[in-house]
Length: 107
Length: 117
View 1 (cartoon, each protein chain N blue to C red):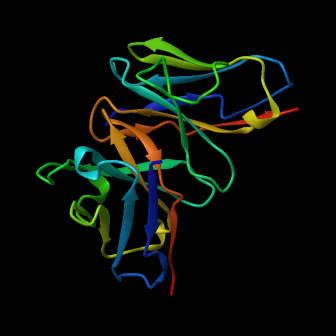
View 2: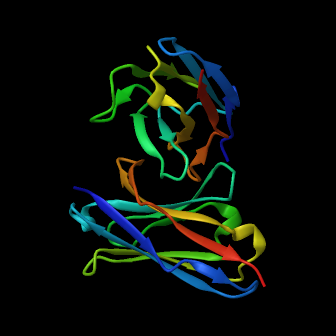
């Protein structure tokens, strides 16, 4: 199985700041990586697919990048509504696997 | 509007079976792969498996392959998850999701399954 190592486990940032979250795959996943946002008590919402494509309706302050085994999610100009847990998912090879999540707190 | 609504969860005794359903609407159900994901309380997400449009291909995470069975009824626009030999480790919220070119793009609200005596 492909292992997804996500970091950091948590971070705290202020309104208006920019943050990045990383996912490292145990092997090349050929950009087959998605990012999700999950708020407490809610189901995950797709933000980014195929490493850098923005899902319809997602604010442009979210962006994804990377290739090979290393991928990142960047959130510009943090807003209070961005407080959530973020997960990556590799959908390159079965079984698909998730990162362990990053909890983002807005100061 | 894409809508996925899970049902069938609840409290179940260890060793018993349970079948979850996911009713889909707002899109052409038989054009999409569908999948299940679970999340234990306070934990991360675990991909369970996916089924293709005509049920000819079903992929599972290996550790659950012998316990869980995914199926679908395209006439009823419904996805199923049959779970057997349940243990406390299966206590989780279970989500169904639509797979759009592999990526899970829309998720249901989830249904809670609690395995306890």
